[in-house]
Amino acid sequence: MPNEGTGFLPRILTIAKNAFREAVRDRILYNLIVFVLLITVSAIFLGELTAGQESRVIINLGMSAVLLFGAFIAIFVGVSLVWKEIEKKTVYSIFSKPVGRGEFIIGKYLGLCTTLFVNVVIMCLGVTLALAYVGGASKTASIWGAGFLIFLELTILTAVAILFSSFSTPALSALLTFFVFLIGHFSSSLLDLAKTIGSSSAIAVFTGIYYALPNLSNFSFILNAAHGDVPTVSFAGFATLYAIGFNAVLLAITVLIFSKRNFK
Amino acid sequence: MNYVIEIEGLSKEYEKGFLKKKRVLALDDLTLNVTGGQIFGFLGGNGAGKTTTIKTLMRLQFPTKGSARILGHDIADVQMHRRIGYCPENPYFYDYLTANELMSYFGELFGYDAATRTKKSDELLTAVGIVEKDRKRQLRKFSKGMLQRVGLAQSLINDPEIVFLDEPMSGLDPVGRREIRELIAGLRDKGTTVFMSTHILTDIEALCDEVAILRSGKLAAFGSLQELLGGEEASRNLEINVQSVSAEEIRERIEFIAGASITPRPHGATIHVLDESDIDAVLAVTRDAGGRLGSITPVKQSLEDLFVRD
Ligand SMILES: Nc1ncnc2c1ncn2[C@@H]1O[C@H](COP(=O)(O)OP(=O)(O)OP(=O)(O)O)[C@@H](O)[C@H]1O
Ligand SMILES: [Mg+2]
Image 1 (tube, protein in one colour):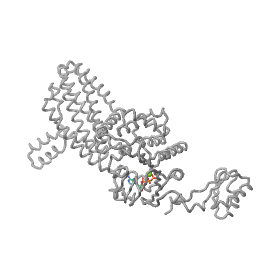
Image 2: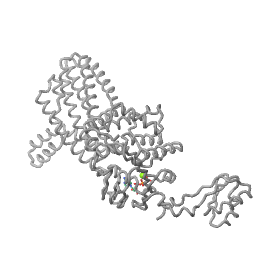
Image 3: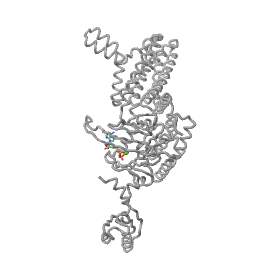
Image 4: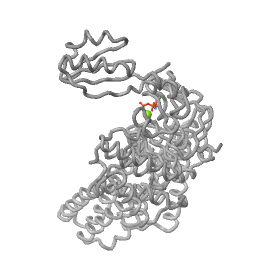
């Protein structure tokens, strides 16, 4: 009986599910153990040291760790996600099936985003418990607000990592993605700096960087969260739309490059 | 005539070396049409361009020139892949999956439901000889031959109309080779077209209906096996293996036979003669020296010739 086939959405979902399974089996979630240990130990120490400031320090430290752990996974898993499949030739059997190159990229991307989502949720849970331990449970909503924004930031970082790895080596891609991560956090400050200096060429260069690279300060909320703030609907809404838009552009470029690739 | 594979003027140039300056023409203007319902042998020595052709057909790389159609669809049409299967050369799969999981994953890409996937996975893995307890092991623990078997099984998950097999026998033990040979013959009986690359002459003789021979990326010969081998059948060379006698003991007397040559073997020798009529003389000499006959095999020189001829 000839195969009836299926739509592109089920195929993308199938690939995403498998990418998530790969992450779990490759023990990527093990980083959570380190994270939980870190946060537990600091909660105990902080309880003894900083009188009155515990909840602020816990949120600051905890959420910064969430961001760094997440960024680490997004970058290092992201750059090898597709590269490894080409290198090990697992793409051969995938693309002999009715699977488009774009479906594959988007599926793998969504799989890693799911992994990151689970990671961020568990880490935020850890911070929430630590916060409760030092008696700051009233600031729980701030943690989850900041956590949501961190997750959005990580999806962009993942898309950047996959884009770079579609045409360069994992090591170089990781380095470049790390630069995007750093500059992305400071690009708006750089723009301000250029404006204060007033040199027109500096303004041109930094405006270019500002628009070409993701402005990750749109997702920075850790300091505010430490003060007990919760992102407003408009702040979170803008961040969400910004992430979706930026991801769409990054993925479209990646698919374009990847579709032209010869597998060696 | 209805062709299921039509290759037209296909060329593939690889760029190599520093700054990609060096160029290798792996495929040179290959034109080839394959009729359905047969086992088609795609032959050629190492580096002849077999894998390059198949990868181009599978859209894993893009031709420098030319075009190809499979089942009437341009190879750029991804949905045509619902109707074909492919087992890569030295296949490698996700090593964190078990054989069952891999089959199920691929089945899902074709839209089969869970029950169908389980059924197909069981059937196919049985057919290629992966036993039940191995199916639950991760593929990272599979041997080369076991991976080759899984590769065959996964290429058949969608009951393809055409299946492309790139050296399907490589890495298999003798029993495995016989099993896979029977499996491939069975596919033809079901009406599946098999497009198989290989350089193993015995597999070709046992299986292939038509063959194409590739040499340095060019089509060197094409036709049915009989057509290509016919005519030369009359003058067949023979290899006679003898035992319990050393080459030294009989060399002098054997070399009197026109065109005969002798090579030593462990516990015996191999004598190469040009014609059946020489057998008696060789046997007489061997018996005189106290030796025994081991075997007589016709040398498939014609097919070998087709391979190496410039
Ligand atoms: N990715 C690549 N980059 C550069 N050259 C390549 C590449 N792949 C193959 N070639 C070259 O193309 C030619 C054909 O190679 P191909 O793999 O198609 O041969 P083959 O017939 O499959 O050989 P084998 O029997 O060894 O598998 C060879 O000269 C090889 O060196
Ligand atoms: Mg090959």
